[in-house]
Image 1 (cartoon, rainbow, N blue to C red):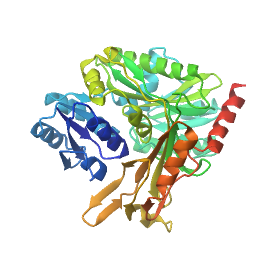
Image 2 (image 1 turned 90 degrees about the vertical axis):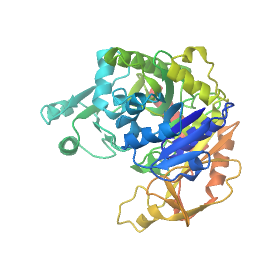
Image 3 (image 1 turned 60 degrees about the vertical axis):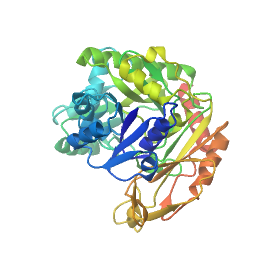
Image 4 (image 1 turned 45 degrees about the vertical axis):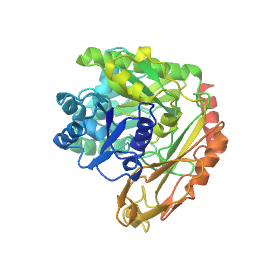
Amino acid sequence: MNVLLIGNGAREHALAEAVVRSRYQPGLYAFMKSNNPGIAGLCKGYELGSYGDLEAICTRARAWSVDFAVIGPEDPLDRGVVDALKEAGIPAVGPTRSLSRLETSKSFTRDLVKKYGIPGNPRFQNFTSAAGIEPFLDTLEGIVLKPDGLTGGKGVMVQGDHFGNKAEALALCEEILREHPSLTIEEKMEGEEFSLQCISDGRTVIVTPPVQDHKRRFVGDKGPNTGGMGSYSDRNHLLPFLKVEDVAEGLAITRRVAEAIFRETGEPYKGILYGGFMATRNGVKLLEYNARFGDPEAMNVLPLLKTDFIDLCRAVIDGTLDRLCVEFERKATVCKYIVPRGYGLPKDHPDAASTSARIEVGDVGRARLYYSSVDKKADGLYMTSSRAIGVVGIAETLAEAEKIAEDAVSAVSGPVSHRPDIGTADLIETRVEHMKRIRS
């Protein structure tokens, strides 16, 4: 059996690891836009190129005689890679371009949830022009702005973080609509966010352990939003601030969304339905959907998967997920991202040059290591402007998992940084106390 993996980040490194540990011993091939040494080292062959070059992807897939493809990032999904592979006779774990609108179009998702009476929507309204925006802003206590289209996880703007008042919000709305076809404006909610990555074959939806990501660049949730500085999951497949009912609500919403998008498009959703949710005083609310595994959240759940990943992929493609027992180990995980010192900082900052610096990686001990935005060149390993390496601690307790991950950070030398507080008892306790106040 031969498997094609599309993508070159840490999420895809974790997917590659899951593929090659299968009892079927499949041949792994990869199509990447830069040379990830972790993925390349697991492959029988790989090609470097653009995710927009669908002809090249299909040509390589046929040459490698792949049985199916696994799509990692959102960019090739939005470009229609699953549709192109399907035309070439190659099935994929990932939604078609039409179905991936759950991620690429915030307005499409909000309207879908509303149309089919699915709970979880906040108060919202979609706009394609400035007409009517100001009166709607006047009805909201707090404001969230979401441009349509892919924004690398950094497009959402929240009152109090990115702008201060309604006048500033209105100016931002006009700016967004100059660059994006539409804009979703929502009420700002209070609560704790959690990621619920689900797997769908178009009829059956199963859930993976919930994870909490940390978007902020600096310790104590300070600084600009990033693609995610790290994440954690707990051994009981909950999170310390969540109730069993919260996860059940998130799963129920996702199952209804999978059913609704099938009714809307006539296409079964085969792939990952990753819901970003918020536990609030009034139950679980839907923040957004992603059409693929999260990064870093994939690194928390894929290493815990006890079920053979190839069996899981085949069940998704064949629509037989209801016949497969999908199990995850009962362990805690903590992922910490090692990033360039200048990551998330202005281009004129003294550390800005670090985003393309060379780094060296030593012994990470008991941690798992996943390469992300790096490029392996003849003279060494270089960072490529974004998050460089994810290190993951896996243990019986969160405290032990956090220590394993933190100890591993020192194995990477160069102009790098990370968030040492992710997964620590102090930071988790702030989440627990926050939810106690909200629920009371």
